[in-house]
Length: 224
Image 1 (cartoon, one colour):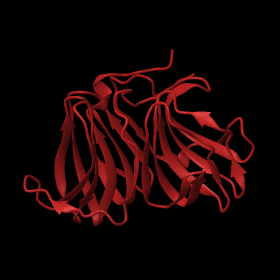
Image 2: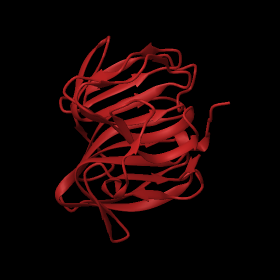
Image 3: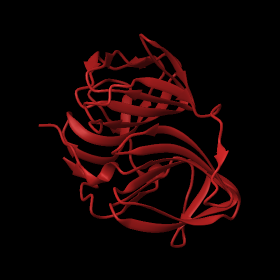
């Protein structure tokens, strides 16, 4: 299966327009944003767990990172409420479930095997610091590696800047509105731009807060 699998082209997705597709586990559905592979895949998705649903125990052979968007995600290690960002390196494993139900944004098979740092962070509590190079922008760095840079950004109302990266970048809108070339993207919409691409972005009248990952699209790993 291939969805938005041309990583040399931008992919701009209004996620509410996508159908929910059933996963192999009852009560777990997903909206596929990009994908290379079938059930074992390099994938970026929004996944919805119905109340009381669960997924079978599995090992993250390619690593996993996710953001809890709504509800509470759970596994044997703890509870992760909305706003939690989690990184599970290659080789980790768990039994995911959600007693109250939840929705998560998740990326699979996109970890460097040498990166073994496992952590979770509350995006609602991190300190956002002003960016001295970009007026109206505050940022909290979540993960900084040679091959990728992950951050939470907050832009004041009606702020405009160019966004670029030699290794490409992707954005998940968490709150507010972000515009590109006259098209507006709202809560949980997703944008991906290829390596060496620059995009002019503007925040809406109420500002915008988004998760952004840079640098990782210069090297595309797939299962196999």
